[in-house]
Length: 316
Image 1 (spheres, rainbow, N blue to C red):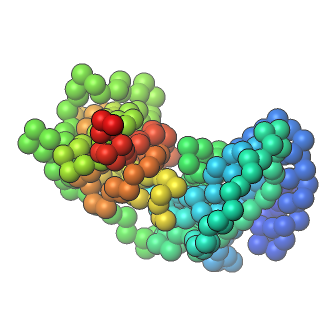
Image 2: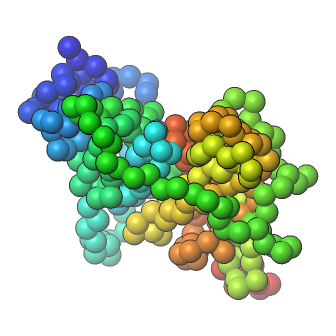
């Protein structure tokens, strides 16, 4: 039985992942579809397999291909649904190439480029837990995201030895007049009616020592743990992608809710205001970045954020 965009059987992901690549590329090139699509085995038997192959196809205009260096800028994200952990890395090994000194001729607007690709998830995400559970996998390229796929990792009956992180307090702690704050403000987006995340970010940020890079959001998400005495806590993983980055930037914040969760996984709501510049390792190179947020099965973004050098705005 075959499934997914590449039409491979379960075993072929390991034994013959290239079998359908020419057919998949041909079908994509003949359609009006443009973008990225990924595929992976739906079930991985951990007693037989120690890898998780991901294959895919892309179809883009030649202009988009020229603007977006796929091998350099593709980012893979895997969310472990049972624990809301999120793992982020480059989809392909980074290889620095000396830029050509000859100016490039713009490609014809009407030309479409279609090809296939593959990578092994554990090789790209070395910290990925390899135990029973469900992984939701995303491919990000600048401001585009492929339709996510899910792979269920199964093993013979036995204890799950993976220790998911336990969060005991909001992080970062609330500020004194400066973000982070975890109260609703006039600028907070509305809490989603269905489970999910709403998020807005400053579109243009003056890149100096006094600047703030503000992100505001709200959520309706499963609580990380039950608590009768304090606010429920929800981990949220932020990811920045951009051409200026060798590797994607990622940071997990822990958001408090005004609701009490009486059972793990119960939906709770809340709001947040963050300053990205106060979080560890936030990129400060001038350029345009795309901000994403992940919480288990839920995603928000991309929000474009341009860091503009101060001299760019100085009067002539």
